[in-house]
Length: 254
Length: 213
Image (cartoon, rainbow over all chains, first blue to last red; front, side, top):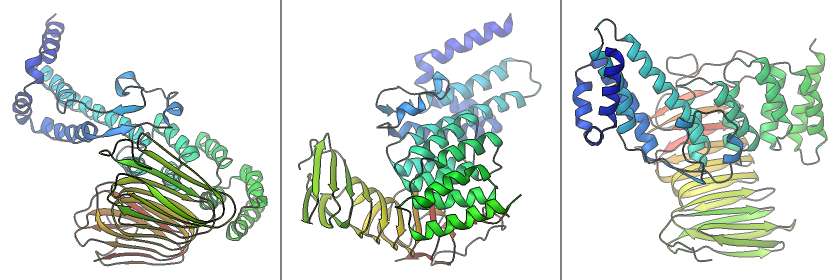
């Protein structure tokens, strides 16, 4: 059939060395379609960031191994994740596939290919969030928090942020994780996971923030944990006072 | 302790139970320290990863000389001020009870302190995210006048003072929205210059000051 034959031909073309060596060729195609040009620019920026980052995975990688990410989105599982992608090739291949298939097929509506490219962009951003969370540099882990603005949490990224909340060595990064997880509505399953995460918190600042969260959302099941924190000999006085208020209010709420 | 790879950047991790810590940049590919007081110190260097760990309940006065360009990870578990001078790179500091002072540093910083002011003056900033978090004590940042960044600031029992631009209060276009429940966290958005990496500044009891030099 014509469609399969065209696709086969196109894939052969995309795999060819001459195509990969000629990013200008892609630009020529893209320049003719303003919508593709816009999406192209977005993908280019995202992949440039990945292409220029050398992200190390010192002590964290094991706990991310359970995350069900597609193999194509994961880098090598060795200690150092060296993201050295050819700058244009994957983004170019993705975009050009959509563009040229659209050119070969009857010209009716191009919105499908734009949607497909937008989906690819979303997946790229999700992968970036998880990749940055694995960095040994706290600045890059903090950067992942800013990516959440552009890409709401999914099951995978929620799981990643929960791990960060419980295990990150930097208090500031754990505070950012708490903000990311609780910025929007908290589902019943996330509520349970957050209360479980309270058990391992030892920082007075995080304890205060999570106690206030428990009060805000009326998490009565958190009371035993709050009482344990109250009895902790290392708890400073402001924390103990704050916990007393929260426990009293939770007990009062019907 | 000389670095195994003198031409590559080092990561220096320092943890201290109790006492003061001063970290000074120098132009040598080595890490050296001087300690006064009690406690015992474990140190190691492996493939440019340097670890200095001070144990014991006695108060220690520790001065550490580190390569000018390095990744610093500093933890103070109990009492004691921390000062870092002229180091450039990613500076991660978690302090408990005591001030944190970064003087003429460069790069980016992730700093938290339970009880004590945070003061940071930057010769330059890079394009990485930053965070400053304090439970009690003023947070004061002194930045180059041409800094570009997007700051999210949240402060309870204090105010935001800045030299750069009017603050967009939550509810205005471009600001972060509030949660209208008791105990919510209100974030205010401040754009420095043309905007840039996201910096989070959170003070649970005190002022936030963002000043330029």
